[in-house]
Length: 299
Image (cartoon, rainbow, N blue to C red):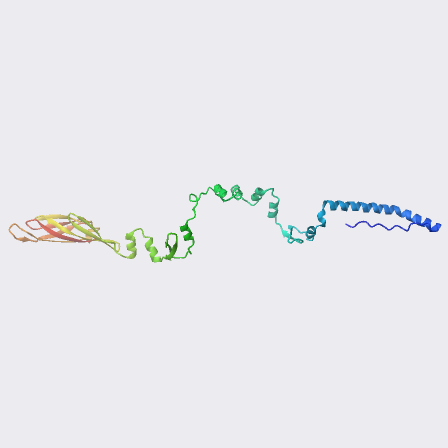
């Protein structure tokens, strides 16, 4: 701040002056002393005030402070140094001010919206402490590192690709066609054969009357059954099929046979009178029993 100027005193009287000049100069000099003393007192006060300001704020003479004072104040601006001797203003938002006025880190975390659990995790001393807080144990609560999993992660995924091991800890992809997927989703071998349009392997079943072969073709089980049956003389004999047919109207059963009577006359009288899904009735007109061969086809 500017200091008070001291008014120059008028010339002082001297012995060499004439009596008239001496008296005139003496009067003027003495009259100016009161104003001179007042100006000195004012200047003294101003110097004392300036000294006090310099004592409490020596930074006024610092180049860093000079750099800060070169900024033009504005709302929501915060000064900062951008070099050793210059400064600039940064924007400080309401959210930023809300953090600055917090008393400690815990209060700042609350201002940021962290819950108590999140705050405890952030404040954890290390990863081990974090795992303890989270209740995680590798291999129990979380998957530990595994070379096979790392090998999977190293693959580049793509549509219609399958995974296969090429070594103990190495994998590769292979093409997986839409047709192959229709086989993979089948529940069993029979379903796979149906998808492929192939017949299932035949199965054989037998009983005391003969044997049956089952062939699955196009979703239908076809039966070929045959055997030998001793026909009673002049009567009916029941043939029980090893496997029951699904429909009696689908069955075709025939029989042939030969035998001899007591007098040596050959008898070949044998026929199938009727059948069900499980049996056929064999009629023999021979006077003596004989063994007949039978065959039945159907589904």
